[in-house]
Length: 109
Image (spheres, rainbow, N blue to C red):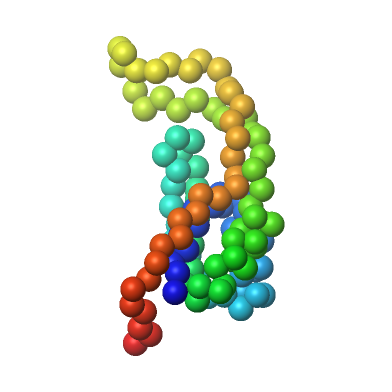
């Protein structure tokens, strides 16, 4: 058995969760926040048998696309020595960060 932890941008969450449910996968959805852009993410914990791992990865690849967007600089405080970005800049967002871990024990209680 595997535990797949996928961190995706909120914009991709609806399509991803609909595809997972449609394919019969169960998951737990957790709201998270990215550190660099301070934007909303969703983390999904998906438990699957080993044979289901590739199916989940295929769905993630199909529904979580990378794209560019304009970011507004975040400045928590104007202190000497902090990085200052005076203008908006383009960043790549989307896609998914995926961790696949072996599960030594699983119980449904």
